[in-house]
Length: 284
Ligand code: AMP
Ligand code: MN
Ligand code: MN
Ligand code: MN
Image 1 (cartoon, rainbow, N blue to C red):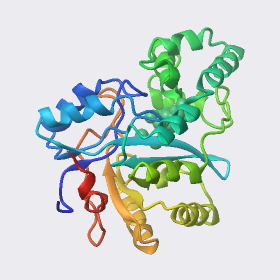
Image 2 (image 1 turned 120 degrees about the vertical axis):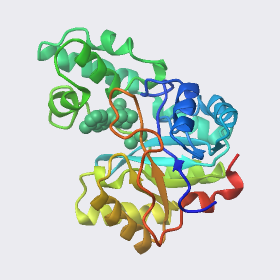
Image 3 (image 1 turned 30 degrees about the vertical axis):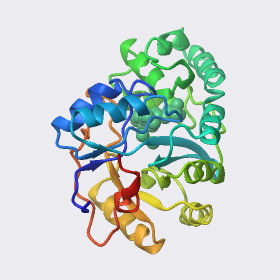
Image 4 (image 1 turned 90 degrees about the horizontal axis):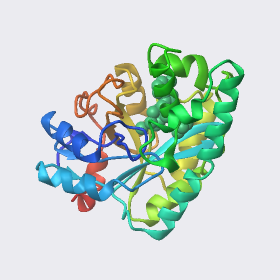
């Protein structure tokens, strides 16, 4: 498989905080020319079998996927797992534990929003949830748009759901070492998702990449819907510096919200090893 392959290895379905089913995502990916696809729901592998079957029905190759929420240096970092065995018991238990606490966090978010005059946000967000264990900030954002509080979900995050804002509740997710180990022990490869999105100092970012490598992490997302061309170029250099393979994924959530559609991404910059080369024996 060559490095110019149209691979899209990052997106979300109704199993986490996307708005499309795995089948609808597969159809959309295929229509957009995706050749190798992975569904990477947050902290959950419940959509994997459906996604793989739908991929094959559309003639696409498939890699199993997940996006694990991790807490590192006081911030949330996302680690993508690709090409693992989705039946692996330790991984399933780890993801189950990582999902735990989302319900209590959501109730606290709702209580805080009530203090600034937004009533019944928990019940409102729940109406958007496909998987009750996976209630996320995205579901609150959709409810606040519906309720007319904000024009779009970006505005909700800016005004309410991020650090220092009235609907933000700090949360402790999995630790980096555990997430990388679950993925590796299930036969997959761990990838740091959208590195330009984090607000680390240079030292913290260096620590993230170094510790990730030490724990057995092997890849970094270079081309993603949340990177500019300059950010992709920057993390292409980081990939070389840390000898990491490179991944590519839209992070598509919804036709109404996502500005980067499935498969509609620039190619990986030259001089990198694509993650799918490392995972060629895991492609189904
Ligand atoms: P959670 O896992 O509940 O903390 O929710 C995180 C999700 O919220 C991410 O996966 C994104 O889908 C979404 N998100 C986070 N920050 C933003 C933002 N600034 N604008 C839009 N969506 C965001
Ligand atoms: Mn999301
Ligand atoms: Mn993410
Ligand atoms: Mn994502």
